[in-house]
Amino acid sequence: MSLTLKAGDLTIHRIVEQETGFMPALEFLPTLTPELLAENRAWMQAAKALDAQDVLILCIQSYVVKTPHHTILIDSCIGNSKPRPRFPNWHMKTDDTYMRGLAAAGISVGDIDYVMCTHLHADHVGWNTRLENGRWVPTFPKARYVFGKTEFDYWAGVHAKTPSPTIEDSVMPIVEAKRHEIVGDEHAIGDHIRILPTPGHTPGHVAFTLGRGRDEAVVSGDLMHTPIQARYPELSMISDVDRTIAAKTRRSFLERYCDTDTLCCTAHFPSPSVGKVRRKGNGFSCEAI
Ligand SMILES: [Zn+2]
Image (cartoon, rainbow, N blue to C red):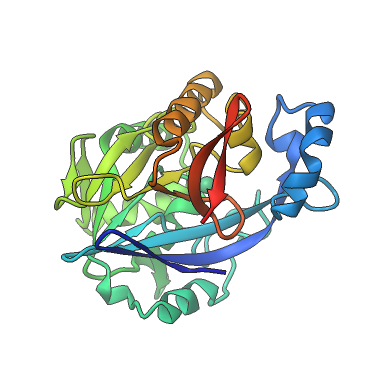
């Protein structure tokens, strides 16, 4: 399993926190029919994206991008000690898998210059903070944490009405520590990292395009979760906030990168998680490199 990739003058490391069964496919993808699942079961199982009980297998990972100037961590996974009772594999966990993954890539928490989140769900912001003497503190002591304005405003509004544990323990402590930057879609880091708005899963969901002068790679976040959504971009997942917009975003994103050399770094596809987008029937596939 390749955990390190080269793209132009960038080095990209995958830091995997979990790769395991998550939810039955028919529940996760509400418009997936048993017939369509049956047609696609063999290749999904061969890709290790589906287990023998038709449960989808998801990888949960960060991408650490080293440019000639900065080290940037994109999406910070689940984290430890976080109350997430809906997901037993996430709830109050205490394992060292993530920190061992960083160390294996030769990265320490002090090396991270920026943390960027594609969106503010629990499996993308968890390691933003860690528990220290009963308080949530930034895990990456030198990092600026970059949040998209549309996404931040949306969750701040949700949290103000009904407190969200995720926002409470993984986003607000960053704001209180004054380590955050709220940015618009035009924001870039140097000439290597740009924002590509990809709404639908959440209102302010963004992808990040990486590379000087061209998109050598793109980190796609949760605009899709599992390879069958590339094959059938109209399949939205259960927690897409706007399933219609999510489906449109998915197709236009896949069309944008179809038959290019851009490495598509997915959040949740099973390992190797990274591939090049190719046309397949009326949809696409992300072909491992
Ligand atoms: Zn996710």
